[in-house]
Amino acid sequence: MKARWEYSMTTQILAVVLTALLSGNCFGRTQSSNRPSPKEQVRAIDTRSPVEVRFIDGSKLRGWIGEVSDTGFVLSHEKKRQLTNSQVAFNQIKAVKQVKSVKPSHTARNVLIGVGITVVAIGIIFGIFVASHPLG
Image (cartoon, rainbow, N blue to C red; front, top):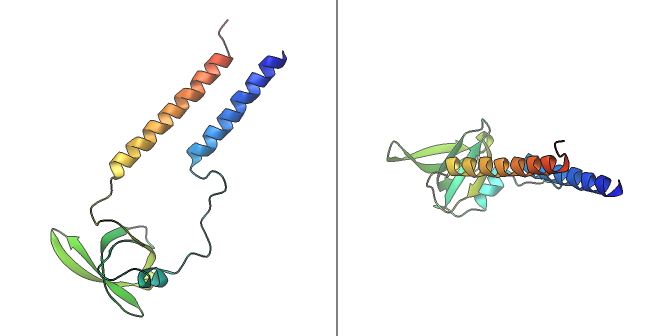
């Protein structure tokens, strides 16, 4: 009887750990409240560096930093296969980060990897459940 309880407890602990890992917010990972302002982020990056700009409305744009002023900066980016310069105000952006290149991200690949990991984890949990609850 004791061995069955220990096995059941192990299964429950494993289920909790896998759930925490799949939730994406495990081990107390939270956003930092002392994040530098967008203005500080831009000033810390060299001119003509490739960046990804995340706007307050949720959109993002990749390009290169141009001239920086007190109110914003110029972002050179590709639009319809032509290089375009856009004036970006600091109050429009949420964050700016330097990237290796301005090529599009691999969103579809990353989503498929995430789905694959989730399916494998669910399969493991299901296998443990079936093994701990035999039919008959």
